[in-house]
Length: 31
Image (tube, rainbow, N blue to C red):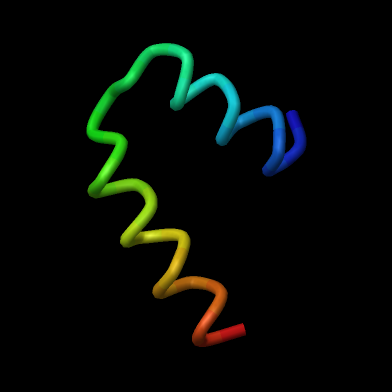
């Protein structure tokens, strides 16, 4: 599963969406 697919899956399920977006934002800042 790619990151895009994982993100789309999370958005579709609406599970901790804000938390996950914050986590991805942190990840990209550190990368």
